[in-house]
Length: 470
Ligand code: SF4
Image (cartoon, rainbow, N blue to C red; front, side):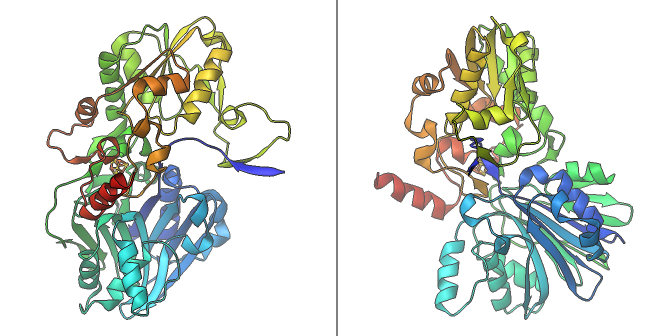
């Protein structure tokens, strides 16, 4: 029997992080927080807690609900905890890379959870290995600990600042020691991290949907370049790095984050509906119904329908219980992977001209199967509308993306993509409207996967070299 990956043809966020300080059931709150952040990573999860002397850890492969049984949570006592849920590509999916990562070093017993990607970690790792450092994982996150241990600073916060000021790229971090919880966002603020309050306890989380589940109040975002120290003395804010132009990941609003979260100070659902409204203005379609690719395409499709006056219909139903892999039948069934996830509602589609709204086209392979599925269910025409611009370049800031050559829009015109996916027409949202929909008046968002221009030097250099060698 052959087990194969479902090609869902999306960018994937690498991780979700949560931290709790000052609550007698800290690990249980961290667990619930991870539950709310499960969409940010489904391959492994971990929680580290402390009662003030040592760190306790439980981590494993799988979903949050499978790893944290009541017995497992009983092994995580204390008033402070951090949690991490991780997505990984098939190659590095191993228990060794599950986070939080723990070390015992000259700065104490420490645990770290990271959402993002350090763009100069490879160079640092090479240098450190050359000088004799031994790495336990193949994750970029471990470099942070090596640099912390080498810092001359006497206190943890200073050592961490030293380490981070030598690193480039995207990082939202939660770090736990027996004494304190640190929450950090990189100076460009690529990935989100928010601060919440539950009675006397402090909570930090990648997205505010975690606060809603805990009945915690959203206080504010951790600022780019800010390190929050949360300990027995309360909360201290340190700006550990020189200011840099902000680069909030715009894709968090297009696809990654939950619509019920407030991300970068803005409700994601509001952005997504706005994406749909602007898409309807820029790319009208001669359609009888608007159908989303569920779930992520739903808010934009609602916006498209409201703006155009074309009725919204759930013409595709998603099965929510499908994992990332499945066993393929020996007798091949066409488009089996997509059919496992999505099924058309024939009654709604028969004889209809459909405006199909999705949040992105990555390789184009899934869109092609969905268009075929709609036609086979009786749709008279399929007009595909995408609520962001063509994705032409990979992400180096903590998102799992295919290589440039695999991104269909990096090598093909819009009409060639239309022909490949088999749609009657294809329209993308412009970059200008994308920025408008997320309220980016001052150019504070990263849009590199749509432009191919990167805000960090090393990446821009690598990309230029790669382009020359093609
Ligand atoms: S390149 Fe795209 S996915 Fe990556 S941080 Fe920038 S906007 Fe987000």
